[in-house]
Length: 307
Image 1 (tube, rainbow, N blue to C red):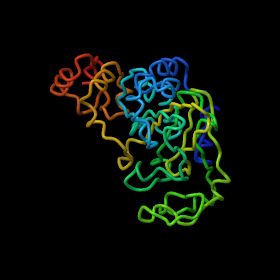
Image 2 (cartoon, rainbow, N blue to C red):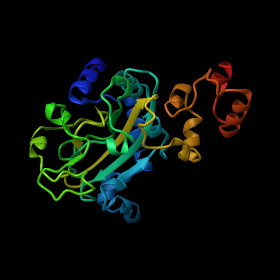
Image 3 (tube, one colour):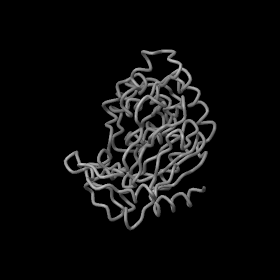
């Protein structure tokens, strides 16, 4: 799928699936370093390291690691040209920010990964999503391994008059009737009609699923015996949409993995995290001296030349 077709589908349907989109020169090094974050599937199921395995059991979200990662190759994925270009194309601007980046491992039998259909706005914005082009947000699922129906492929529901007409509250829509919980954010009336329209987003490693926070979707159960799958969840927004946020990068910026990443990144990649570009009024002899002291391995010549 070319980017214009992906953008059309993303706006019209609320999501777009790009099979094998990530370039091999970006994907392969990241896959080779996955074991720095997660046990390989075979090792997990063979209980090679029971203590390491323990954190992944019980809760579906226990398999999440957040940026910056222990792997430099994995850190490079959110800022790679292919994904930045995709985010720029979908958002319609080059002035974008990366507001969240997570890697996620799932193992068959470790937890219940079957979710209710929902939208992601509750932890992606302090407001509600906007359909105005200037304020849209984009989420990406990046497959770091093959993802099939049996390996818990995410389910997506295309935009329609039904989904567009859903209120902001409730946000979670179980298949069957429930008592309704979470202060009214879980619907008490089952919506099997929504599940009848869902699509399994499958694909080989390198596939990217782009969607909007207001798109109905869910995680699904893993049924393949001894199965495992590894993905990344990335989120971008226009720089102006300051209300759309999940992580504050400053509270992660005194970490060895952060320093290692920053010192090999270029100005455009660092802009995604909020670094002012060369030529910005922030850059003065004072701030350049201080940043050079904080990041001695960072080549500051692009910022110095912008003074």
